[in-house]
Each structure stands twice: as C-alpha cells, then as structure tokens.
Length: 395
Ligand SMILES: C[S@@+](CC[C@H](N)C(=O)[O-])C[C@H]1O[C@@H](n2cnc3c(N)ncnc32)[C@H](O)[C@@H]1O
Image 1: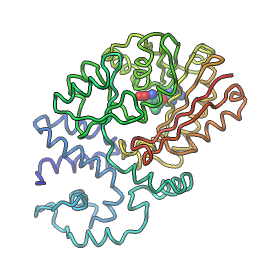
Image 2 (image 1 turned 120 degrees about the vertical axis):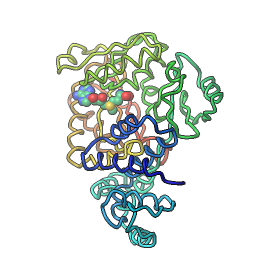
Image 3 (image 1 turned 60 degrees about the vertical axis):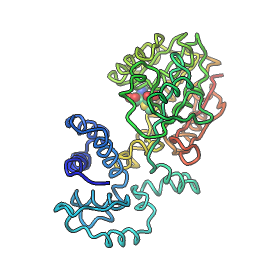
C-alpha cells in the first residue's frame, strides 16, 4: 500500500494529541476526520485504523523504534505491519534490519503484548493459564457487531436489506439478534441505521439484556444506563410494553438515550438523573427487574478502546471496585421481593466480577439475595468482548 504524506501527517498529529496532550483516542480521531472533510473513505479508514493500531501497540512500537520521534514511531508501526517505508525525509534513520533485530530480541510478554507490566502481572495472577490467550485476543481488532431492532425488523430481513447494499453479514450462533459485518466499516451513515433498524452493540453486550429475562408489561430499572445501549435492547425484548426507568449520574448521557429511543421507535423508556441516595431510596421495592451495568475498568473491551491500557492503573481499578460495591449495596433495594437483578461489567477481572458478587452476598444487604447463575465471558473463548453477567434473585 502506498503512503500519502497528508494522511500520514493526519495519523502523526492524532498520535501527538493522544499521547502528548492526554486526549481520548476516539475523540481525537473523530475530530481529525471531521476537520478534513475532503478525505475520501479510504483515507479516513487509513487514518482511523493506523491511529488505533499505533495506540494499541504503543509500548511495543516504542521499544522497537530507533527514536521517539513520531514519524519514526509511525514508520516502525508500518514496517511491523509487513509494509515498506518510502524514502521520505521524515523517515531518515529508519533501518529495516535493525527494527527487525530489536523486535526479535524482545522476550517479555508485557512488551510483546504492548501492555503495562502491572497489567500483565495482574492478569496473570487473576486469570492464571487463561491470561496468555486472553491478552492475545484482547489485542485483536474488534469486529463490528450490530443488533437488529426486533421492534422494527427481523435479523434475517436486516441481513437481506444490508446485502442489497453490498454489506455482507453473518449471524453468530447463540445471539438471537446479532449480525457481524464481514468487513469493518462505518455503518452509522447507513440509512437503515437512521431508520432505527439496528444499533451497533457487541455480541457479548447483547447477552446482558437477554439474561435479565424482562417480560412485556414489567417495570424495569436500568440504573447505570449511560447512553442507553442496554435499555434499548430491553425495550425491544419487552416488545415496547411496560416501563423502563433509565437512570445515570450523568444527565448528558441520558439525553442520548432519549434520542436513540426515538430513533428505535421506543416509547416505554423514561429517564431520570440520579441526584443522590434519595433518588434511589424513593424507588425501593419498585422494580420487577433491575440492571446494574456498573462502571468498570473496561479490561474486557481493550480491543475497542486500546487507550484504556495507558489510562488504567491499579489505583483506578481499586477505586472503581469501591464504586461497584457501593452501587450493589445502595441500589439493590430497588428490586422487589422475587424480582431479578443483573450485575454486569465489561471486565474480565474476577476482582470486579465474581468477587464483588461474593462480597455482596456475604454482606447484610446481600442476605436477601441468591445467585441464580453467572457468565464469565472471555474474549478468547467467545470471540467477542470480555464481559461478566451475574443473575441474582431477591428472596
Ligand atoms: C458501563 S457504563 C453503562 C453503559 C450502558 N448501560 C450501555 O449499555 O450503554 C456505566 C455507567 O454508569 C454510570 N455511573 C457511574 N457511577 C454511577 C453511579 N454511582 N450510579 C449510577 N450510574 C453511575 C456512568 O456514567 C456510566 O454511564
């Protein structure tokens, strides 16, 4: 593939923003693409993919590159992808053989997998034999998965409709509404998306609403609803009958939920910003089903958000674990006796998952609950994101 200097500069500038100005990768890439409307879809694809891959392999690239100059780092990345580097002034000092030698001399798993040492130690300690395969899988590029909005279309009809537009998909087994795109592409501009026929949602994430077993007519609370991905899925499973209260501490996220609900043809979602413990207390014993899709480290979704590797720390994981336990303790009272609660994370770490549930069950509040089942979804076993889903019932 031939390199073009304007797009390489685009990648290098984006990387500069991400690492030297501590900006979020997805926001920087979105801004870069927006500010250059003349770039065609190939150029956009090149910039987004190269920037994400450089973020993913940042530690390894830095180890192998002759210097920390951003063009040298880009050239190292480019060579490591099996490409050739053109004789540009920016790439002077790059010696292909030396890059190869430096790469071959590395034996540390943390460097080869391009993760911080602490993350490798934590993963190995908590996941044992499974860590090697898991971190390998978490470094792969994520597939684009969509969920057919069953309120408007069946999965089969959606697949046929996309096929008419030359978008090939396949239906993974075990996920009733999921379709995987055969080729990665930006699907948000597709008219079917604007008509609310599908949402982009990983297959593992689609297991969460399914596990809650919400029936039409029920009263459901999604207490950490964010931009509403799971609320929308719940509404579809409930055939848009009953009531879903989508709550979050961040009001702006709930605004997004409302917009998405309208596009999806959903009328049963009401949103409420959590102002404090009073908001929760007022809802005691009110829900047939309660979803706690809690904030987490995101260690199960590193494929989608590779910059998480560089933003997390053992301290930030300890902090989020405190919030998770607080949410379990404080929010579980909203479910009625006999009702079902799901505790879910997009993490693969047992400390955020089964150990949190065990701690809850051993606490005073947890005495009222029993664990029905839990799913520990690992990326290397499922082929999709890493998730944890525990189903508990209030006695
Ligand atoms: C994993 S995300 C939720 C994703 C969302 N359910 C979806 O499917 O798109 C966790 C959410 O919890 C919210 N959050 C953080 N602390 C919270 C708290 N104490 N109570 C409720 N929500 C909280 C965050 O703002 C974030 O939107």
